[in-house]
Length: 173
Image (cartoon, rainbow, N blue to C red):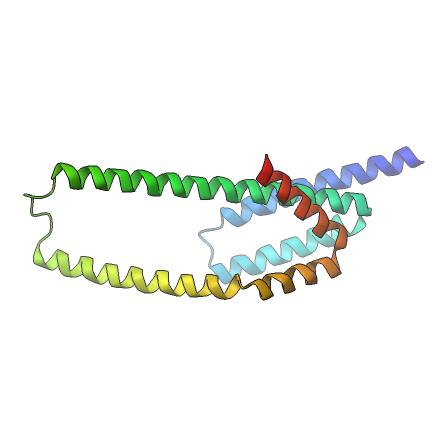
């Protein structure tokens, strides 16, 4: 009977991981849906998955689920950050090469009307980046992060420990 129970737990664990990745990819590909609708749909999907599969897992299964999710999240984040840094570095090098060689010194690229539009775009981009920066600063306050971790730890101790372990492994590897 124990082997049957272990097999069922393993099957439920594999299904929960599969559905977690399925939900992740569904979330990342739902760009055609409004953000609020997508958030509501994803929230409902995760609630259904949690009730169907995750809640029935033993503590070790919850730990393993959290570890896989933490590992995947940290690898995804690291890969995206490295990609952004590579792109920024390449753009910087290209702009420096163009500036040093004087390619655009004698070429009038923009008309007066286009320069005005470019200036408006710069202001709009600066305003958007400032809003984003302010939001990130508000969300990443150490007190708020600690409160989020404590809330997660009090609700799902094994999953939170698994997520932290998986994230650590993902960052180290």
